[in-house]
Amino acid sequence: MELILKIIRFEFSNAFRSKWIIIYSVFFFLTSFLLLNFGSDNGRAILSLMNVVLIVIPLVSIIFGTIYVYNSKDYVEMVLCQPIDRRSLFIGLYLGNSIPLAAGFLFGTLLGFIINGYPDLSLDTLALLLAVGTALTFIFTSIAFLIGIKFTDKSRGLGFAILIWLLLSVAYDGIILFVIYYFRDYPIENVILSISLLNPIDLGRIMFMINFDISALMGYTGALFNKFFGSSLGFIVSFSLLIIWFLIPTFIGLKFFNRKDF
Amino acid sequence: MIRVKELEKSFGSFEVLKNISFDIHPGKITAIVGPNGSGKTTIIKSILGLVKPDNGEILIDDKSILSEYLYRKNIGYMPQSASFPENITVREVIKMICDLRNSKIETDPKLINYLNLSPEMNKQIKNLSGGNKQKVSALISLMFNPSIIILDEPTAGLDPVSSNNLKEIIIEEKQKGKTIILTSHIMSEIEELADNIIFLIDGKIKFDGSVLSLLTYKGESKLEKAIANMMSEKSAWN
Image 1: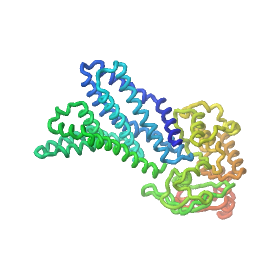
Image 2: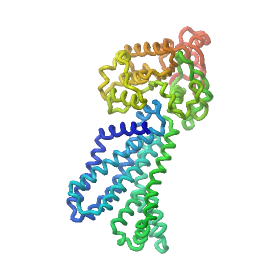
Image 3: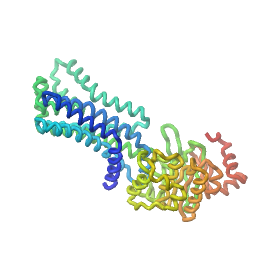
Image 4: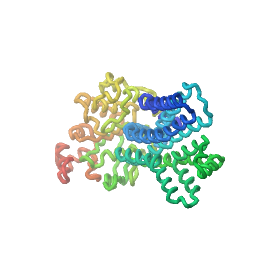
């Protein structure tokens, strides 16, 4: 544990020295500030902010994380020549990379809210927005670490990272639409619900929309989603799935890291 | 003593180490020699735990080191090309490694002077020349007074004065009874420093013994000729 904290501390000082985290935080500050300041309706502003979060956080986390793994190869080699176990190093690197990213998002977004003079919004909605953004940061950083460790070739790894992002944030919705259209004559709501649960970005989007009470616009499917996600079972299932989305890539990444040749 | 038993390692379909066994004795300098790609660095990295062997065993003082890490407290390693985070200073690198090792920062001023590193201590790694990075690497490998010192082409990229100073330090460390492993392509350097030699070709040991016994075995007076003689049985250095 002491070793993990030492590595995290070093990674923090490294991350805050790099201008990327500051630029990332300023981006979320400007987005939340401008959307709330210039939008006439706070509800629509936060919905727009959620859309930005759902696109930008997975993309930045997966690209930043993958590049980080490749760029820190020398550093990892140097540290592994010291009496340090690989597990502590992996956890330290992972948390040292994901915590500053999550902190940059939280700080920038909250600052936008505060400077706007705490606009009239339910705290639940704000908390959910921040929680979804933070969860996506940790999930996509763990996927990035898995890719960076598995693929030795940097260009292949980065290509695969972009492909995963495209698949989960763009193509997945297309697949769902295709299923809905193709099987429109069948009662497929439960299937759609299950498919949606398997994508962390969709999970975040649906949880937010249900909380925002616009599910009524989605007809019967919306009602079903509302019934499921609005229930305590739905909350537990969604929350557990987000944790599984974080745990599986992290454990596989750690397994590969333990076996990797440097 | 370091004992390597039936070590095998492949990278994809390329077999780098083919069932090799040897011992490295304390108080001696053992040189691992061979053409590029013969498996020298893979052996060193296997001892350090950076490379995971497919088969075989590595024992240090009769204890298996595979899947262990604390034994590295007693190893100082100077890699072929120094690898440090680029945007921190030499002093910060040293502080970080001391911190990771739970060790007090005690850089030997004599060592720093010998390596002529004093003017570089507050410079960022990215602003150092290749040779100065090598010197930082040498400093780190020696500063914790390890009982095993592994030097992968230590004088490559060093100016003649620093190279000579480093060789003197290596001999001093040997006289203290340390186990030293060295790789180099400079035969005169190996002749000057090494007691024992392990000669590798295509991942197999071609010779394992003292430098003197190699010279006798090949009937040569110079190591370079003896090695060239063995090499002629195989293709030239890549």
